[in-house]
Every structure is written in structure tokens, then in C-alpha cells.
Image (tube, rainbow, N blue to C red):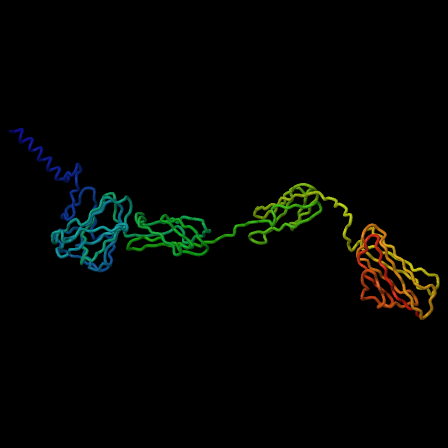
Amino acid sequence: MKNYFKKFSIMFLTLLVIIGLGIIQHGNVAKAATLGQKLSSVENGWTRYDDTNANISYIGNFGRSDWATNHTGTGSLLVMDALDTNGLRFNFTSNKLRLYGVGYPSLSGHNIISIDGKDYDVYAYNQISNNIVALTFDIENLSDGEHSVEIRSNGCKRIYLDALDIDKNGTLLPYNKALSLDNSSMELNVDDSKKLMVTTTPAAIEANLLWKSSDESIATVDERGNVTGIKEGQATITAIINDRSNLSASCTVNVTNPITPTITLNKTSDSLVAGQTDDLVATTTPAGAQVIWKSSDESIATVDSRGKVIAIKEGQVVITATTVDDLTATCAVTVTPKTTEPTNPDPDPTDSDKIINIAHAKGDNTNNAGGDVTIIFHGAADATLCVIKTADVKDVWVGDNFTYTIVVTNTGTKTAKAVVVNDPVPKHIDFSVNGVTTTQGTVDSSSTSKNIIVNVGDISPGATVTIKVPATVIA
């Protein structure tokens, strides 16, 4: 029997220890503090801060009351007015936070606590005994570091706060919420990207960060702050904390589209005969850029400062145009030797191939109609003309009429081209232009009584043309 009581005493003491430390649930010891539980002394591992602490900021109308039966601290219980714009703020460092408020049967709603922009419900006041201060909020899974807190009415008629607990390794801080970017302006080229770095206080509110571009046709921004230029123009990139604070910071982005230098030639290959020239034309971006010309072998072809290529001898050479940006364009030039043209057995005449024949008239009397006949034609040296000028009388006197006869014969082996007979009048003679006849060609309209011109035309080898010119003897 004595052993039985001894065992019972040990079990009872063990049970008291378990009750003191908390109830075992699923192998873990549960927290002793639960929502709605009456305020008691601070649990081990926590630090309590009264609602009168200077690090708590109050927004709007508020007062203090002593009507709660178990409020703590040097001041009275905090009572906020009903407006949803009213509330309180503070920062703290810890991953745990507890709030204590008072029960009130007519308040069926609940307040909202926002931690780093994320909203949580506060325990409803009508679930707490009337006028009793109890635990209204408890969170223990926050990230380590500093956090920003806002408590608001959420349509309730009151916000009641008597105290708050923070993990003993943390501390209560003045409210501070800030957002900044590492650059207020940025220069970007089209298709280039740069990252904007953001700094927030506290750091945890960066989880609610949103990015926005004022004009995505000019610049875009992704969820990590990477800004990409799309086209020329200006856009504003804004980082926004997506909560009630609407904290934001902006960066002005100027997007430009720089001109990419280029050079091209009007030809990439060319063929020249030795002695020939050709002009290469360089087109640059930007226009008018300085170009330096160079030949890979000046014994084959040279190039001057304006791109004029001169072929020297047979071979292949590369002509290179280079800009000040060291951009190059090339033209491959092939030079062939100059060849001798074969002799044309019957070449067409040119203006430089003119042959002149001069014939003398027969007669020994001073009154005889003598004189010279000039013939001009085109052709090779072996196109030879024979010209004979005769009169049909031996002796003439003043007032006599007679006829000159001019016979032109091609005695060569080639055609005489474009033959022209020019017969100037002898002394004491007048020609009768209207009476001139020719077996080939026409009398030129510029003929006068002192000079007859006949446009004979071509005379084939062995052919003969006869021209008769009426004349009168004058004093």
C-alpha cells in the first residue's frame, strides 16, 4: 500500500509538471498561451511592451481607459476610435509577436494586423470575456529580421491594445517603412537590359514588390527588376509595395537606338584590261565617314584616295576600303592583258581616215579652162581614186560657153567612202550651177558660180563617176 501511494505521488507530480509546461499534443508540448486566454505574467522567452511605449505610433483619435480589470503597464488600456483610417504602427525584430486586448460583447467583428504588407485576423473581441484582457493575436513563424506592423479597425468600433510580447531576442522599434532604387535614371540601348536594385525597410516587405512600366512599347521590366529597351523613347519604371502604404520609387529610362557603323562597296568583284580604270564607291553609315583605300598588290592594280582603280598588268588583286572604326569592305579585281585587235579587211572609215586627191585640167591656151579639182573621201590607203578634168573645146573667147567634164575612177581594191568633189572656178570663168549633172550623188546646195561641190557618195573598186559642169568665159 505504501508503494502504491509512492507511485501515485510520482505520477501526480509528473502531471503537474506537464500542466505547467503545456499540454502534450502529437508528441509536442503545446504553447501555454492560447487565443482568448486571460493576460497573466510574461512567459519565459518573451519580452512585454506596454501600449504606452514611445516606439508605437498612433494614427487618428485615441484615448485610454482604466475599466479593464486586469490591464498592465504604467498607463491605461489604449482605446482607438472606430474610423478605419485610425490605427497604430511599429516595427520589431523577431520571428514572433503577440498582442493583448480586451473582451467586449458588443464588438462582433475583428481588427486586422498587417505584417510586412500581409494581413492577418485579430481575435474577435466578443469571444473574450467582458472587460478581461486576453491574447488576441499570436504568430511565431515569421522570417528572422525586421518587420513592419500596422493595426487597423477593419470596420470595428474600437481597437483595444493593452500590451504586446516579442521574443526576448527581438526588440520593439519605431515604425519605418521605406523603398528606394539604386538609380533614379538609366540610359539603355534598344535590345539591351539592365537590372534595377531595390532596397526596402524592412527587407521583408520586398515580398510584396510589384514592377510597372509607364510605356511597355519603349521599355519593359520583369518581376526581378530587369529593364529591357524596346524602342527609342522615354519610360518610367516604378517599384511599388503592394499594400496599404503604396510605397513606390521610380527610375526614368531613356532608350536610344545608336547607329551601327557600316561600309559597303558598289562592287565586290571587277574585271579590267591592263590600262583600264574603274571607280569604286564606298557607302558608309553614318554617311560621309572617312575611308582609306588600299591595294593588296600595286604592281597589278592601284587605287587612289577616291576609290579610282587603275589596272597595271595581268593578275588578281584585292582593293580594300577601311573606315576609322576599322570596318572593311573589299572588291576582288581581275586584270587581263591588253590584246591587239585583228585587222579588219574592210574597215569602216573614221573621221581621221581622210584621203585627198588633186587633179589638174588639160589645155595650153591661157583662155583654156584649166584648174584644180579637189576630192576628199574616207577609206584605207589602198582605196585609190583617179581624177581627170577636161574641157570640150580647145580655144575659147569671151562670151563662149563650154562644158567641163570631171571623171573620178576608183582604181584601188577597197571602197572609197563618202566621196566629195570640190571644183573651184578657174580665172575668167563662171560656172552654171543649175546645169551641173552627175552620174552618182547630188550637187551640194552650197555650190556657187565660183565653186561647185558634188556629194558623190561611195565608189566601189573599178567604178567611175562622171560630172559635167557648164561654164561661160567672162572678161
